[in-house]
Each structure stands twice: as structure tokens, then as C-alpha cells.
Image: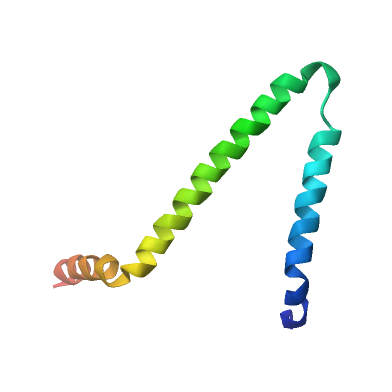
Amino acid sequence: YLLPYTQYLNTLAFSLYSATFVLTIATMQTGHIKFQLNQLCWTIVVLCLTVGQMKYIMHNIFNGLFWFTFPFLLVVVNDIM
């Protein structure tokens, strides 16, 4: 029942991203801008590294799914028998 709403997914994602960015900038305090920008930059770097690594790990697992599951199944069968 959500299929008709998929056409608005990109607009919704962009709107939420824009609103989050505006709220982040709007809530910065005058005396602490340097500290807050430093924390924001480190948070973005850590998120990019974490999400990027997990994306490529999942990509590699799906590309080599046989070589991921075959040794696992060999161990399971060996433990059962």
C-alpha cells in the first residue's frame, strides 16, 4: 500500500536532510561555534567512514555469497554430524 508514495521518496529525503541542516545551523551558540563545528565535522567523518565501510562489506558479501555461506555451512554440518 506504500507503493504510490515511492515517487516522493527523493523529495522527502532531501526535505529531511535540508531541515536537519537548517536546524543544526540555527541551534549553534555564538560563543561556541568553533567547538560545535569541530564536533559536527568529526561526527560527519565518523558516520561516513562507518556507513561507507558497512556498505562495501555488504557489497562484497553479496558478490561472494557462495564463499561466505559455503564455509559456514561446512562448519554447521561438521558440528551436527
